[in-house]
Length: 189
Image 1 (tube, rainbow, N blue to C red):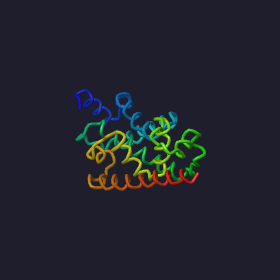
Image 2: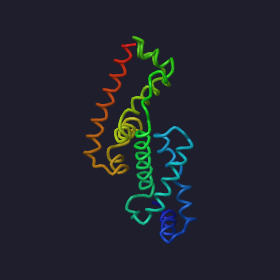
Image 3: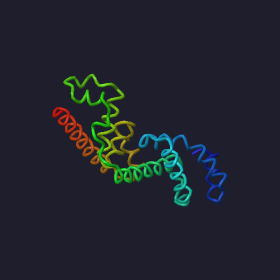
Image 4: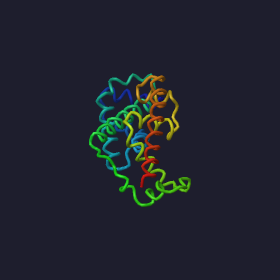
């Protein structure tokens, strides 16, 4: 943590909302980047970012400064995303294959799956990921897509290193079954 940021944090501890605004400006790109990986709608990302910073403001007394502020705010952002995904899962209804579009359905029905386009692959992977629990989706996204280390994921989620590894192993197995099931459903068309 820079000396400048340390001073800003001390001002926030004394109740300065302007100093907290400075922290928000310094870390908003990072928070938006984290949240944008879990939600595509920019309006929702903005709402989630606002929720993240409100949670940080309310819990600021818990920030002990042992780790950089960036790690602390990143952890809050990941937990906000996790809460959002849990809520979305409760509200979400199953997405029928017909809503994927003709190109994905054609690929799923074809005997040449290697010809799938990048955009189509993202849609299929997105659909498969949406069928995972929020926790499984987060661990797969952080570990496999963002290529985060187990230690980083542990700090961001609050899970133990062993829990991250076990969760990742189980999430990969679930994702594989989902994709196999999608492939089997493809062959039934």
